[in-house]
Amino acid sequence: MTENSPIILWYRRDLRLGDHPALTEAVASGRPVIPLFIHDDVVAGQGAAARFRLGLSVGSLADDLRAVGSQLVLRKGKALDVLRDLIAETGAGAVYWTRLYDPIAKARDTEVKSVLKEDGIDAQSFAGHVLFEPWSVQTGGGAFYKVFTPMWKNVRTREVEAELPAPGKIPAPEQWPDSDDLADWAMGSDMRRGAEIVRRYCTVGEAAARDRLHTFLDERVARYDTLRDVPSVKGTSGLSENLTYGEISPRTCWHAAYPQMVDGVTGAETFLKELVWREFAYHLVYHTPQITTENWKPDWDAFPWNTDEEHPHVVAWKQGRTGIPFVDAAMREMYVTGVMHNRGRMIVASYLTKHLMTDWKIGMRWFDDCLIDWDPASNAMGWQWSAGSGPDATPYFRVFNPVTQIEKFDRSGGYVKAWIAEGQGNPPESALQYFDAVPKSWNLSPDARYPHEIVSPAAGRQKALDAYQNRDF
Image 1 (spheres, rainbow, N blue to C red):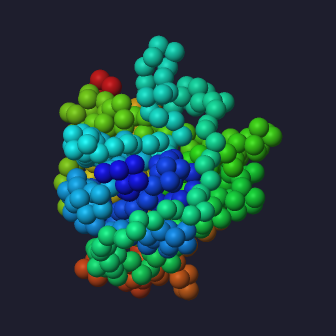
Image 2 (tube, helix red, strand yellow):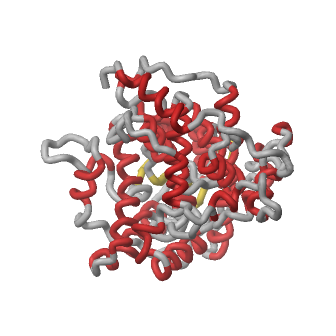
């Protein structure tokens, strides 16, 4: 290995060229750069929708790399084995990547870095997935934050490093190593017929993500603080999909919106708070990794949740057939688009964990499989927040009423009509697409009657409160 030996740039959830510290450092070295994506056990372990959407992002990145004189090498296998094989093939002397913080990725990356360094390889990880490294944000006493608002106050005026430009050209090796064909990986195969429906709603790639950000800031951010709660209108940024795969960086979003917050645009500040809410999730995952698999508050371990995934009420919830319009509309939106409005996420999670008294892990796993914007930190924290078992969670006695919620946030009925076809004489295409996206084995038809409530809001709330009453939380 020489000073001119190639650098392998290992792409994971940072599928972009702009504001990419690892890529910037590699290009600045003047050495050949070999971009690499590995389909390893971490990728294979993702849910069907997330894996499908990840495949689209990988394909878009490959196109972007070709435009700057580079290529994306695709390999399948255990990450460490793939990297060592590629190092042997190319004579690469370094491997760079962007840090991840969830426990599964951390365990993999720790092993990779340790072994490669023992092999004499320059293995370096870089920032880029979050605004602030989780260990760099502390309370006055030097601890990590367990409550969001104090963390927001801490970082609200904190300096965020400048966004890095995308390279105009990436130095290429004299000879490119062999690469798998992305189509052969069939990353959307588990979506089956749902892939065709969901694909129509995806906004894929770095250029599309930046356009989406600027459209939001130009047209909607001024009213974001109020419209973000109204599911029938396009009031949010939609960027969760792109941030998930790193098609856009949180720094890019921050620097684009921050001047408007300084100018007093309330919606801009709310948007930046949502970016920091994502940071809070990663902050907690880093410091308390058990949040992804166990109750963050151990005193919830003995709570008598239902743990039967095949319970008829759980099946009805999964199918969007609870008889509660807000819950069902939100679940159906997810099957058609791959995402769910944030207000809907709170309602369906509250209904499952409180009205149906079902373990939040069942809901989290279902979202893992169905969301194209699945994020290991945000999904885990969101479910524990709703269930009451997590940090800074909604109080256990706060049980959202899905009927009054829909009356408050969907007064026109537009959201329910958009996603529930039964009972409508001429349902919109979005409502009908649900029946084309879900498994045929569900045997569902838009001509069927809309189901009766499996559990009424009043009865479900009382059952939950009775269960909470004598417990020491």
